[in-house]
Structures are given as structure tokens and as C-alpha cells.
Image (spheres, rainbow, N blue to C red):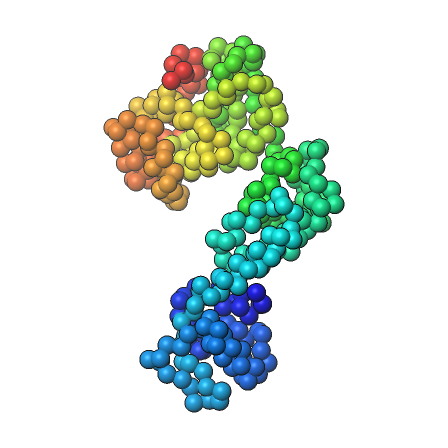
Length: 338
């Protein structure tokens, strides 16, 4: 598929005016004659189909004032190109997702796919795990490619991210360990958003049923949770609970974390917050409806309504609304098995 065809394939609408077509393809032609000859070639191959009601120009060679873009004709060439590369690239590289993607995405990814292919044919899959920047440089000679320039997404798309033995690079997970449960086959871990809550619960950690107490440090935990299995290499069925501010930002953090690592809201703490009077403020925070809706499914209807009402009115329940003694009592006495 040449560059001109790719450019037409990226046009969002099904029909295109001649002016739009000229503007779209302007970088590829130095004269109207060359442009017109190419457009007429697309007409002959039914890639561009004249909309008769719009008529033709009086300029020679005459072109239609408006065309319908035959996406199926375009995808036919595109799929042939994918099939060509499927036979050339390393057999482990899956191109299946590209058949459903925009051809522009394929054009963007192809140079990096060729580099990955070259690595595999020369080295095979690595046996040793190394940090993402090191593996990134090995693959495409750019240490930022995996973490910052879409490399991870590309490797996941072709089904190979896990096979490249990549160690995530993120801040260490901040946690305290309760030695009472380190050998248990089923373990519960509590993640708290704020430092105040972490410090309040730390003195009584050994009196709770939590195997670890994890300081989330706001949004940082969304990334640092990747380090859990390396920092706490204990074989067990691990269950995570989360307690953060009951505001829009806090629920957004929980939702993003839950997408990476399943973490149930620590209901006894939240229920205790809801018995207090909500604080005013935080109306400036952006509402993330998917996060709010997902969070509220964990609560009975009356409490869910109370949370919803507070958020709609710009109010919130900070973790600090619970005094240290309350935190500690809940941590020690609540039923954390359910």
C-alpha cells in the first residue's frame, strides 16, 4: 500500500470533496496534472467513486466534485500487505489485531515491528529478566520506547510483551509486613491512599489480620503495585483491600488501581466515614463516572446514594475524618474475611 493510498484510508468520512482530497494529498504532488492522473487511476480501480449528483469540474483532466471512498477496496490492498509481512516476520509475531485497525496505525508500527523481528531472528526470546529501558534499547535502540513511546502497547498487541522478560521500572512499593501471616496460604493486604492513615495503622498492624500495610502515596500505587510480587515474593492467595479519600479523585485512583490489580474497597473504613458529616470542597475535581459507578456497586443502596449525593454537591469524606483510635479499632476488630 503506497503512501497516497494510506493517506486516503485514514480519512474519517465516507465521502470526500475534491477540495478536501487536494488538501489531504497536497504533500505528495507538485502539480495539478500529477494529482488528477492519480485520482483518475483511483477512479478506474473503484477506490474513489464519483458522486454523480455533484458533477465534474471543467478543468482538464476533469475530476468529480465529490467522491465516495470505497473502504473495502482500500482494505483489500491493506490486507494483502499484512499477509505479505505475516510470511516475512518471525512466526511468533501476531498481526491479527492489525486486520481490525486503521492502516495508519500499521504504517506507524511497521518500522518497530521490523526491529523486533530482527532481534528475534538473531537472538530469540531472552531468558534473563532485565529492566524495561535495557530491553527497550536492545529491541529498538531507544531506552524510552517501552515505557514512554508506546512500545509496551505494541508488544502487547503482537502478543509478545510477557515473553520478553521485562522488569517494570517504577518507584518501590512502600509497605510494612505483619510477620504473623507471612506463612498463611490466604493473605489480605490493605492499601491506604494517605500517609496519615498509614502512620495511624502501622502501630497496630500486628494486631490486625493484614499481612501487609501498603502506603499508596496517592496515584503512585497505580504503577508501584507492579513491584508487589518482587518485593513480597510469598506464595499465597493474595487479596487486596483499598481505603482512600471518598472524593472524585480518590475513587479515580481506586478505579485505575483496580484495573491493574483487583482491590476491593475496605468497606468497614468507608462505612465509618459515612457516619461522619461530609466536608465541603473538592467540587473542582473532575468526575469520572465509570470510576464512581464501579465503586458504588460495592455498597448497599442507601450508602451508595449518600456517596453519590455528597459528590454531586461537591462534598467529600477525607480519610483523616477518622481519628487514629477509630482507625486502629476498625483495623483490629472489623471482619476482614468477607
